[in-house]
Length: 368
Image (tube, rainbow, N blue to C red; front, side, top):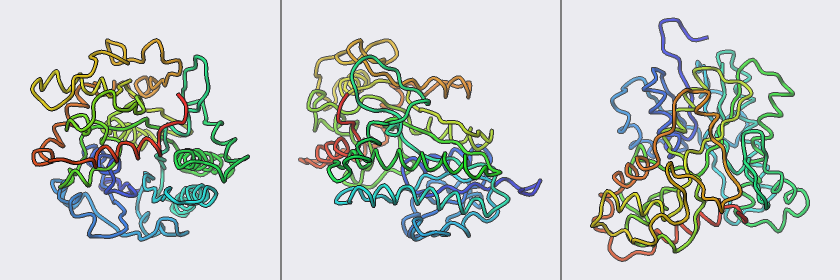
């Protein structure tokens, strides 16, 4: 246990990442000390600068390869909690079985290291909606009770013919399955919980110095904002949650020692047209294409239209924490405001289009 007069120390893996950065910030604001792992110290400079107000409460430790057994042993010293977010998976060009095995081994490494430290009281895993939502037809509402058994079956029966997106989903399912299997088999003294966010947007902790360095699903918003894509160019995965809400539920799990809990984090149904409508409402003279206002989603509240027969239910997070999600409009506008300075001198570019299509290829389910 940590000293009575000392703030608890939480380990956040991959702290320079989009979700991890906001998680570190949220933990610090909640009164914790944070130790973040990076593969290279130089990569942490901007994150350290963004969190400079917390001074000695935030520290960095180098873990060159989290995939190595025991890699986190030293990093967990004196920690009371672990937030596992780092996922150095290279899906492109990767064979299915090695990619899935790697994801599973990372989770096992984290849990085995945590078991070696009596100070650890909680471990939170960053999973994904990909571990919950599966394809299929007919009306269905997905909750934390569901698993993507469809991709599990494909992995079991035909792993050599899986697309990059399917490999990603198979890895996410297998990693979280391993997480819960460890809890069942080993009955560790620490609490264990998993977060399953849908597509994530919201302002990053660190804004890159170029649009060419934008990572993650915020690229969908930026592509519409920049006028490089119209609302009807392609259909992205429409279920969203703000990165700050993801960070908030992680803090809740750490603080409450949530055990055996999954949280499906999803706040709104917002296809590209919804993004365009929100941005045009606050910036009527912007570069955002008009499209067909109101098409493809239901109001009020940015809900799925009647034509959408598969629904994601993220209400558990609200019930348990007693706090609602950040409104969809606010999330879109805050994201756009964060990246707007990068677009001033954008010029002709197809980068964001390519990035958006790449994200769809890897993360979007093959069916509705």
